[in-house]
Length: 173
Image (cartoon, rainbow, N blue to C red; front, side, top):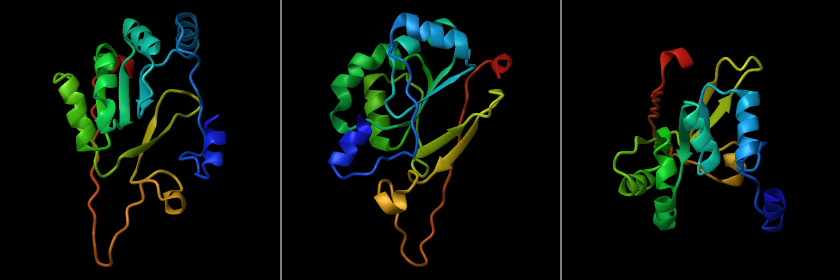
């Protein structure tokens, strides 16, 4: 559906491939968590699924949100999400404005701005025993689609910093 909308708008998709979670219904989420049995769940951007978050917390599966972006007009939506945001161990935002908005919603949230590396690619090998996190300064193909493209002037330099803090029990890793 998103692909068709983007094609009609003559805009490229901002990703190469996407997989979708099942509908956020109790019996489907229960089945997925039982089958996949994740040691942690990493959500991206604003992919907040209430039932998934509730069941993951009940099963003591740590939840993280990376590359989070919330436009300025999201404050009403965030008030609705407040009970679910508390389930997240860590939130990494792509800018100070999103961080400020989240902290206005709940000052106790663990939020960190990731300014230089606002995008992540996550890789999980077939054995599912590890995860690789690759920082990106822009989305894939940003040179052509201009989404997140950072242009530098001659002789200009940029410093990129990244840090992650996973707050979980060592026995889960």
